[in-house]
Image 1 (tube, rainbow, N blue to C red):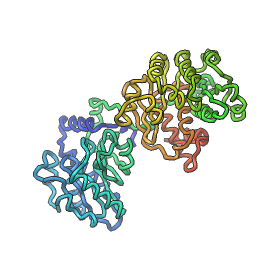
Image 2: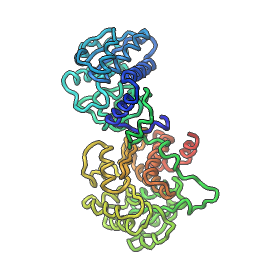
Image 3: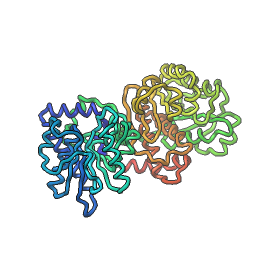
Image 4: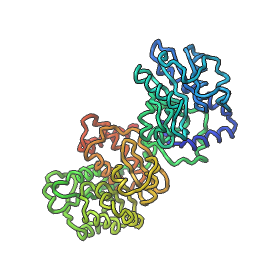
Amino acid sequence: MAADQLELLTPDEMGQADRLTIEAGTAGIVLMEAAGRAVADQVGRMLAAGECRIVILCGPGNNGGDGFVAARVLREAGLDVTVGLLGDREKLSGDARLAAEAWTGRLMSAALVKLDEADLVVDALFGAGLSRDLDGRARAVVERLNAWRSAHGRKVVAVDVPSGIDGATGAVRGVAVEADASVTFFRLKPGHLLLPGRTLCGEVVLAQIGIAPQVLATVKPAAYVNQPALWRAVLPVLQATGHKYTRGHAIAFSGAPHRTGAARLSARAALRAGAGLVTLLSPRASLAVNAAHLTAVMLAPCDNVQECREILADPRINAMVLGPAMGVTSLTRDLVLTALTAAGRRAIVLDADALTVFASEPDILFAAIAAHDGPVVLTPHEGEFARLFDVGGSKLERARFAARQSSAVVLLKGADTVAAHPDGRAAIACDLPPTLATAGSGDVLAGLICGLLAQEMAPFDATCAAVWLHGAAARTVGQGLIAEDLPEAMPAVWDALGRL
């Protein structure tokens, strides 16, 4: 994806971009012609040798209009095209009506089209702005299309998003088309990245159709695709005059002797992220087991809040990560509150047990975060999130709500990980590999964030960057990944990032 195309537009924002372009003098039918041609181009790329029979299912709105344009272009290219219309041609209006009037080929009811005779089907029924669940004839057409694709192994190209996907949330509205590719326009929508929509879109192709990027200054989108272009310019840069303390001193907190591995993963990840020093604070009972596994990461005893305060008196410590396997105990609760109240402007990452321990009293945690002078990042998975926040909606909406309520950057993890800032900015991951679903992976991610924060990267940028680096490390390792592999893959990830 191009570095200048990272904005995500909701259907309403996309509608605004369309209107601004039309008001500036570009006719709507011109945009529709460009969209339809982009769809036709994608169909051409996906047809195998000898395939020529195309069915285009058109809906009653502008999505259907794009389909009519694609049908005309493909027919002019010599392909055998049939259009199946959901609804009455006479009821089409605006640009969709103009596009339909220009179609002189086969046209019949979508319910009567013989899909078995098609080599490829274009789904132009409903776009990203679908506001209701599909039912009746629309649902029947979608279900028949999915059954045909499954039975025959043929391809489906969706216009904008697969019909039935909510472009703002990625939710399935009753039923949704299963596409092999989706051709969208100007900018991606959140529904292309959020689950379950992402799994139904197939390859997402972004086409430019004549909407000027300048309209974004008026639209003011606040959601982005999490790619290096979003944060690369503010990554820490090593300086020839630097030393270990200029790169930051991070600390992590270990748990009991039988639960020490998670904190070591976080600590090593912070070091691999670039922190100059990392110290693991360990209960004395865990010192021996930790010492047996640590080399570059330093070790310090810490059994209680008072010892924690004494350690935090060192002004060179500027970032910390708490939570991985610390235990859901009163001590963990007290250490978190101590870090938030005694840590000055230090950056703090709270993960795992540091979140769960406040399940019955989240307001106490949120108040402490609000009073803290430095940045705070919360990194819950869905279970931990539900223990702290009582909110519904899409993953993007929930993460934004949580960031506002907690006064922290919130990273809501998963295959469609969302990072949200209290000011409304958000970024959605688009390419995290499933190999990350392994024990300890989240502990590494928390450590990567901490390591970037130690180098004084802004919290939202550090969180977004860490998510991408985490995924890149997993792709570098591949199948068979275990959490210990992730920090060790970081040198190769840094090297590859420098060559992008």
